[in-house]
Image (tube, rainbow, N blue to C red; front, side):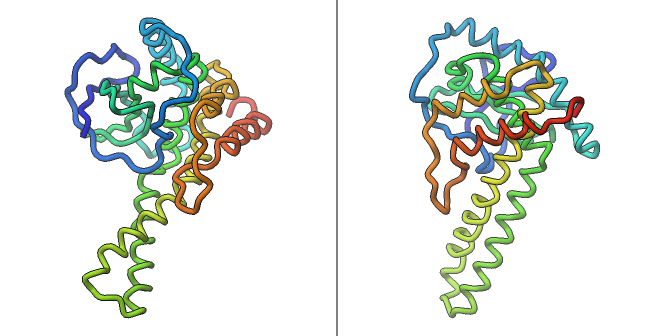
Length: 242
């Protein structure tokens, strides 16, 4: 597992080394593929943009988290994965200290076209925590494994093969739920980014520069056009102050 150094979002400094190992992430992360077109930002400007976004988005994400899920820990930590092999990615998890964590790869920070894109992605990942997606994806996977195992057992499949059947059921169920979770996180991220003073629709332009997920039964993410439309609808229906 890639090693990362973490810190609270209020006191961010550029990560130059690794100190904490995170647990495995779940399949609710943006596609880890290079964008078709990379903005020409200098590394220094990319770091400045990232610091600015953290300073402005973190308090808003924390506020929205406490408003919508006051029973959850809302003190976000941020991690930067500096491994160039990690591609262009961001995801949410829970770190070794029990804190909700948002992880950005250095590749994503480098190719974000502007602060609106960084703010939208950060709000989106915070939205996964606010939407309780980690435990729900796990619960969905467990249920899928159970159901498919029962069906296979009733069909007379050899007991030795049931482990593989359970894995298939878990993957299918978690990926189906994962697509719904992505759209919910997009909606929450839209609200967070706008509250922080950014343009979520401009931020969602990030989707136009990454490969469109396959529209197959096992696709982990919804089509990019559907995600952009979710941002539009959220902005159109947003009540001031929410």
